[in-house]
Structures are given as C-alpha cells and as structure tokens.
Image 1 (cartoon, rainbow, N blue to C red):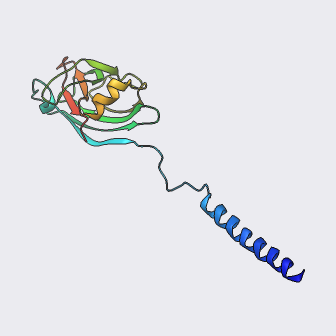
Image 2 (image 1 turned 120 degrees about the horizontal axis):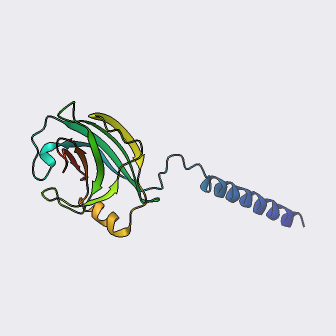
Image 3 (image 1 turned 120 degrees about the vertical axis):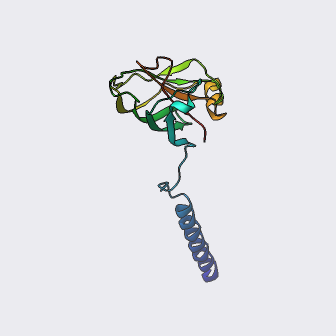
Length: 162
C-alpha cells in the first residue's frame, strides 16, 4: 500500500510540473509581438520633378504613409511648402494606379484638416481600400499629389514606393 501512495505522489508532482510549463507557454504577454503587417512608406519626397509632366518649382515636401493590413486604411502625415508663398494649396489626393512616369485620376481626397495656405502639415486616415486598390498600392502604383493655384494639375508629387 505504501508504494502505491508514493506513485501517486510522483504522479502528482509530475502533473504540477507539466501544468507549470503550460502556464509559462500560454503567457499572454504579447508586448513584443506585432500581429499587424503594416507597410510603411517613410520620408517620401514631394517634388515638382515627380510630376508628369515635370513642374519647375522650388516647392517641396515630405510624407510618411502607413498601410494598415488589418483596417485596410492609410495613415498619413504630409508636410509641404509650395514654390510661391502667395499661392494657395487647392487640393490633395491619393492617385492611382500609375507607374512613376505616368499620371492617374484621384482615388481618395485628402480633406480632413486641409489647409489652403502655401504650406502646412496634415495628418489623417483614409477610408478602407478595396482589394484592387490595395493590390495597386502594394505594386507601387499610387502617389500623392498636391495641387496649387499656380499649378492646378499638380505642383508636388510623391510616389508611394518602398
């Protein structure tokens, strides 16, 4: 009888060890794990030389854009200065699909917090992209265009290419 009690004690200890190991393995501390597959387009230059046809302007800007795979949205921060300080910024859009040597129609307007001065910084998020739009974005076929009173067709362009 004594031997049987000892076997149960060993079994009990083994079970405790196994359960402790499971507790460590199932720890839900995921602080170091990023479950999203964000695509980042950082330090994208906004230049007149990126326009099609090329625009001779001293204006310039920079943008950071992040595509969030979970929400299918773009988060952006755009800073710009037009070439003429008396000019007005008239519109901003995401355009596509087009390779860097071509132009395309606007797909998504950038309106929220829009400033019509000759310079500024704007941050925001877009509506969710469709599957075709997402595919074109990932293929490098999207760009941002800043239109001005001096160049209504577009003064500054930045191609979203990684």
